[in-house]
Image 1: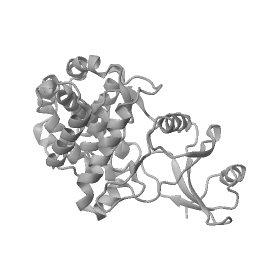
Image 2 (image 1 turned 60 degrees about the vertical axis):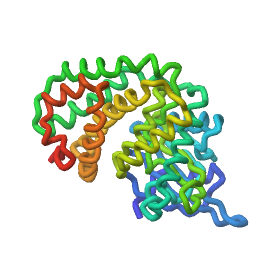
Image 3 (image 1 turned 135 degrees about the horizontal axis):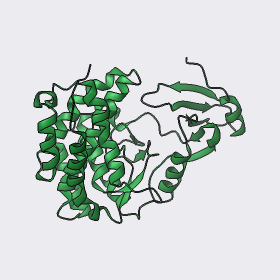
Length: 333
């Protein structure tokens, strides 16, 4: 067992969970740590999830703010039992073990229903007025796409046209901004590893819970759809992507440019992810993320084929060789 953080016992005691069993959960791509808490002292026992988001690297206040907004707007975020935000402690409802990703590994026949339920949850979220969060504006989009030229290109030994890259993205994304007003709440990391199946039916249609939403912004309704259907961590077939995109369109009735904006945001998000995964290897010593990059390139190539991405596709054509963008290429060392 890894060493428990200082202060964990005193926080649990102050929250009314003193003496409970503490089971660390393996971490991944951040400084946050999670612990499953079980208190067997009462009738039937209690369980909870403890998040430790230690300052200065982490700040749990955005998580608390978004969780409370989601819960107050008919969305299934975990209930907050107790918190000490200045010290990084948050005790929340335990959604169990059935991550959508893991459940689908064991129940592939439930894929269609599980994704339909995830799409329906997005439609419901998008029918609510946007939360009191910062805008997903051009500066944020550009800061994210810059991760590719900041991390991936140097890792591959590429000298690229940085000014041209910025200009290409501005040209491609600018037509979209009028259509993301007034905007919807964008969770920003909505995919099968961040969706919990709370009571999974045999066909995957059970209730779903949200996690990892602390970076929420106000932006375009296509963004979380892209995050779900162009998943960097799980294969989503083009046929399933198409079927779920059609399901969203049938329910939400977006404007005629929605699919063009979906491609714009798919390319934008995938460029960001290639940069992030390279950074996780180079800076944080987590090389297993490199194995996911070919899947991301494959999705981005489909996005770049859309006419709305012509300026960005032209830049890639000049600056990043095609063999690096093929599904089996482009893995930094």
